[in-house]
Amino acid sequence: MIGTRFTTRRGGVSVPPYDELNLGGAVGDDPAAVRVNRATVAERVGIPADRFVWMRQVHSAVVRVVGDGPPGECDGIVTAAAGVALGVLAADCVPILAADRVAGVIGAAHAGRRGAAGGIGRRLIEVMTERGAVAGRIEIRLGPAICGRCYEVPADMRDEVEAALPGSACVTDRGTPGLDLRAGLRAQFDGLGTGPVRLDSRCTHTDPDLFSHRRGAPTGRQAGLIWRSS
Image 1: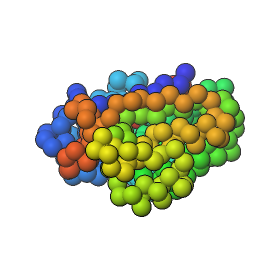
Image 2 (image 1 turned 90 degrees about the vertical axis):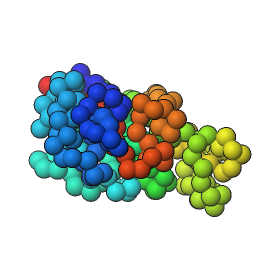
Image 3 (image 1 turned 30 degrees about the vertical axis):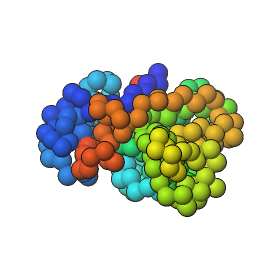
Image 4 (image 1 turned 180 degrees about the vertical axis):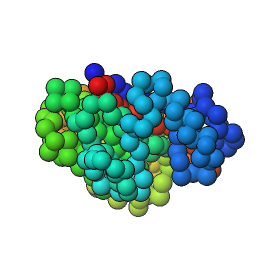
């Protein structure tokens, strides 16, 4: 069985400004609190905490196949192993979860502006197919992220990202240039011929139950999780 979940900021032990369920280990929070939070999430999904794989995310388009050790610096991970959970951290960027249930191949990726424009979504699908997945069977979930109505950027930046990720340019509520990365990623996945793309429309910038770097840094990180039960 393949399961997925997007966490919120509620139900953990971290104190402000990381309250409560911060899962990010590199944002300045107490490491002991992060360990407790990760153990809490592991218990909820039924996968041991030591079977979770977390990346050192660097806003790249690098995707690695999960091996015997930590994946190191990358923004996407893929596995066909059972009893393993993949975690992707976010606090405005787009967490991507992907699965071919027939082949048993799962993947997770972190798509910020640079990574999304750099092709992290396309690369995730490529690596999954290299491990036995079929593009048309890969189901995609795009998690909570800052929405296009809130994500204001300079016009030249919007145009640069739109050229690399068509469908991402938009106008904010203020009438200024903006980016809707989830819209761009959905268009990209549709163009790659993947299976259905489901979008969690919650905006991290406006939803108080979610962490948002733009709304208030420093802050914690929620996670997108995908796992295969043994």
